[in-house]
Length: 165
Image (tube, rainbow, N blue to C red; front, side, top):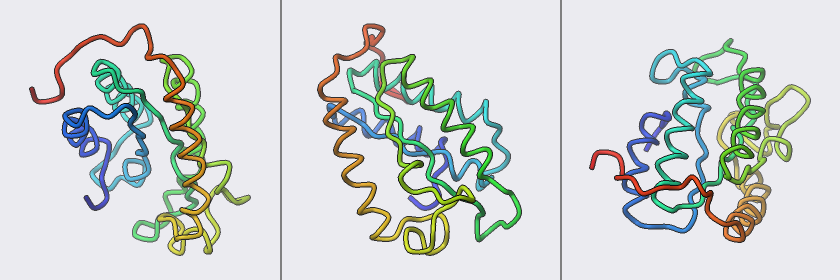
């Protein structure tokens, strides 16, 4: 997928659920903040995260909610100044993960520079990680997977059909 929004990620979640994984990492949000598929407010993005989390947990999949990666500008749409929205969404994601029994994966802190973006060695376009960026992200993802696998599924996880079923 190129430039997925939460809507396309939400669509793909059905295919993920069909695979019956023990854990899913949801890394989404920046393309919505970039308005790649139209205006998306933070409450709209938060609702999409809730839906994805609830669907996965209802299918007995442990959820890891990854922070939105730091970005101070989008090279294809300059001037949006996304850093503040990204920080606000990440605060919400951390809180929501704690409240719903998901694991929070904090890529942001490890990758962010003082401007709320990523340095060129970590993301040559300021958005998409380079191999050096992924080298930082990989062990954080593994730690989150290990942590999620060690957790019990939330007690509110209930059986529900996958999207589109």
